[in-house]
Every structure is written in structure tokens, then in C-alpha cells.
Image 1 (cartoon, one colour):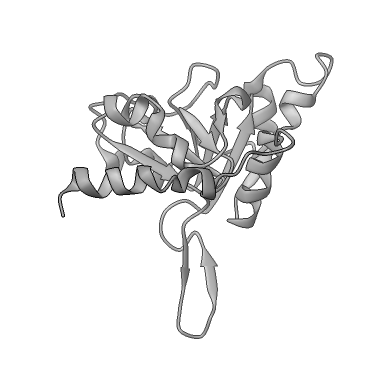
Image 2 (tube, helix red, strand yellow):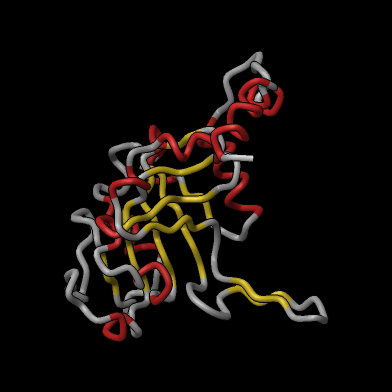
Length: 193
């Protein structure tokens, strides 16, 4: 059976309508995203978005207040002032001492709590795995409902490297001991902007 025949068969059976029946109410995508991210061990942080202007004046000040004063920051976003300067030519090994890596997501998926990162946002692809703590800035208007809509976003087809991150790195052994941060980032915090 050819790929085209297979896809035609799926379209004729209207599987998408079965998988995603019409909803009577519009879901609160940021709330759904936060719930799914929390289930995967990540932290959904919409405090800065909800803070009145007389609270933290900048995102940089808010983020600095979340981590110890001696934390080494590396940022691929202009909003956050970082101690580690890097560019696309930076070697991955240069990021091994980074405490907090900050990136901006292209979009998030409410169904899974995943954020989509690509090489233009990361600058150095290994930043999403080398930093001890990964902070992802996510525009709440860029949260899509489910994974099936992700392929309709233009970013996956315009980037050389892409990754969807759902939570901190985790590893479990045969005795059911779960270790967060065993390989890769120890914590993932997604900040709503």
C-alpha cells in the first residue's frame, strides 16, 4: 500500500473528527498547559504575567529572584542579562558550568506540556541539555491545543535542529527509583509572558 493510499483511507474514515470531537467550551490553554507540564515534573510559572506593574519591574529582576545570587546565567533572549556570553560558534563544553539557561519557545502544546525549541532560539543546541536549570519563556498566545496541530506550525520546517521538551531529564531504574536531573537539566521552569 502506498503512502498516498494510506492517507486517503484515513481521510475517508474521518478519524480526526473522532479523535477530536467538537468541544462545547473553549479550553483554557495556559491552564491545560500548566497542568500537563506539572505532571511531567516541570514548573509552570505565570506569576510574572499576573504581577501588577508595581511588583517586579522587569523579567530579568523576577528571574534573578528565583535563583541563588551566585547563579551563573546564560541567556539566548535579550530580556535576560547573562554572565555567560555565547554565539552559534560557542562549543557545547563551554556551557558545562551554567546554572540557569534561558531560552524562548516557539510554541507550547497544552496536551503534553511540551515546549518547542529550535536552533534560532537556542543559539547553541546543547543549551537545552547542558544548563543545570532550564528556563523557557513562553508567550501564552503561542500555546496550541494538541500535538496534532504542531505540524501546522511553520517553525519545524524552517529549522535545522528542533526539540520538544516536556520536563526535566529523568531516569528510573528497575527498582522504580526515579531520579530527576540524572542526565540533562535538573529543572525545567516555563515562564508565561
